[in-house]
Image (cartoon, rainbow, N blue to C red; front, side):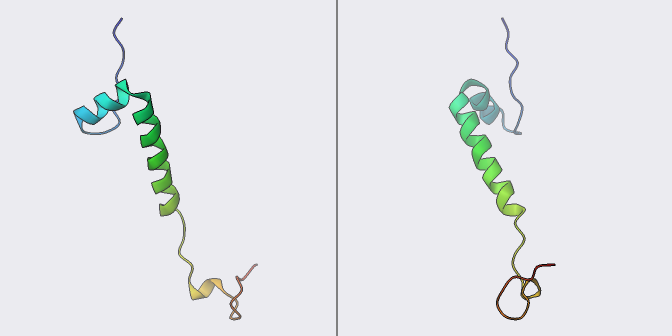
Length: 58
């Protein structure tokens, strides 16, 4: 039976590894998720505070 390979990267060797090694796929997905979580975190600015060092809540 012929299996379908994953095509997640633009590198053939990387796609082959991700297709054939479930642990590599899992680790890659976890690391990819960590990167997107950091990207979505907004930096804290002085506008986020009420002037007394406490976060401002609306």
